[in-house]
Length: 147
Image (cartoon, rainbow, N blue to C red; front, side, top):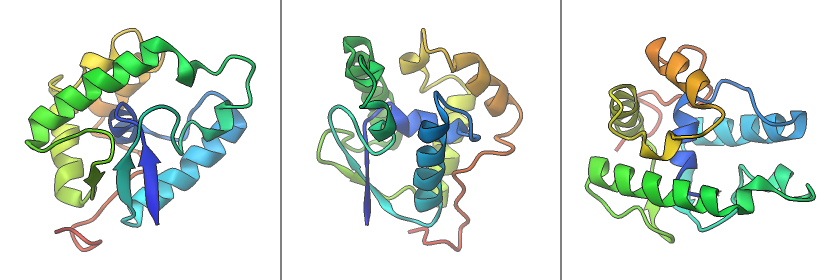
């Protein structure tokens, strides 16, 4: 299967440790993290994705806000530059161990953090990155399909 992700969630998944907006959001994100760890590929989408799904029933889901669309634009720009490949709607990405490690190194160094400005999770993500990504739920080993 394929996981549908918006661009800024490529950054969020780097530091996801099981905390989120609501219990339903967190349970859903846990499932997405497990699927990513098992090697499912990513399809980049515009707007709400598989991570956002539990929030769409809210009266005013923040995932529809223009500020979130701007986060997507900034994240796509940073990740595209880092990986030297198109990060646009319709692109596919295999988040293998090497790409995950490369993205985490860049995140720790602040090279892919433009989209994080103003995010309520920014401080937590910085702490997780500074701690070497201990406890993060998206994990890939070199033997889990790298290539």
